[in-house]
Image: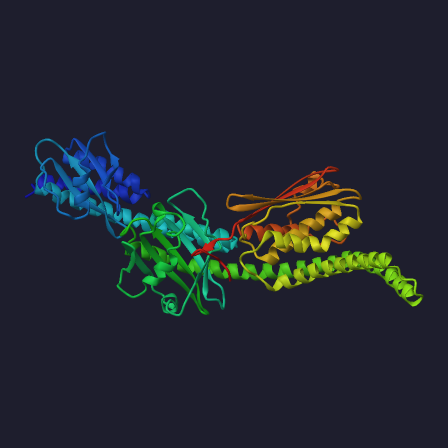
Length: 559
């Protein structure tokens, strides 16, 4: 039984603690203050705050002095496994994120701690727990407000995706990854568009990955419920016992590619449902079973509406970009038509007199076999040139309807060069192509690749004078392919070089200023890069990098 004086002293201590907790918004400062004041009140020699995360041993988070603590004993207390009572140590639990999180501990040799000390410390940690959970809620609202401001500022959807994932990481402290997947309208697949990895500093290798949805998964995806899973051996088990484990199995794409050290053992899946149905899914994963809690599920739920808005913004952005691509493609086709008309006329002009001469020789009986074969060979070469030019143009024109999520570099270059090669030769431009066989597919649609190469090679051709040189070099690199297109032409003035990616900026009399801007946008969307270096009178060098296409269960992702 506490004496009145001790009770009064404790109430004063709680009042001082409460005033400080209301004034601070930093959980660590709050814990440190409570620990220092508590050591004084309990007349302890040392004190610490220890935490025990799922799958890990207890660790000291804050200590007032260097001291050895029995972390196994504290860990048992935090996990409610009833450790032996010690008279030299008093412990009380700290709750955070809706679950047991840590403990405040004090130690002294004498006098021994009694039952009243434990009861008073429990009242202290209850106040501290409420204050910290209030700070966590304030932090969550701050993160939501920040993302809402980004939405109002019309931040690019991909940047907004990562703002959301970063906000979730700061709140849930997941230790594996979080990801956002979208469902294309009318398709039975989920496509990974953003992923933030916590267990390593490496970038995600799965962007663009597509996962198939079957009829069995449709009800789970159409639900507004957030699903929690923990791994039990090699089996995923739902928190609620509902038969939805196949959803976790579908999203467990790291197990086949990154080894045991990156294995996911806890997962939250939040379907994103709009008026037209399921538009995507938000995923958070941990490396340890039990690490994610219903409190984390509640946090994820708070961000579902923002993720849905981001996906809808992306859909509108991609629709606008598709219209820009179509406009640029039509402009490029018109340019091509003007360019290749000279090449086709030259080829036809070379054939016509030969055919007329062959007809005259046949009519007059003067046909010579060797001359006839030579003339036919020239006609065949001209016909092949026309087929190559028209074939390339048709391939480029048809490409607008194929928006696959992977492509092949070599065929895209062949299609482009089929259109431009004869014109370069006619202008006396030396074309040098250095490539390799068996290149892996890349994470960029075939038609988009063709559009990038056509724009860049057309620019190189137009910048080159008679007798110049255009060089194309393809080099495989780890997880990406580098393509360098260089010319020995007029170059770009330094004041213009900084503006070449601006939409509608052009130095060409008949240009529309969208070519390089669209090329960079195409590459940016798939995680590629576009870099331009140039000097006046020395030429221009453009370096393109495109990441390899992701794999889906050992197969190429296709749509």
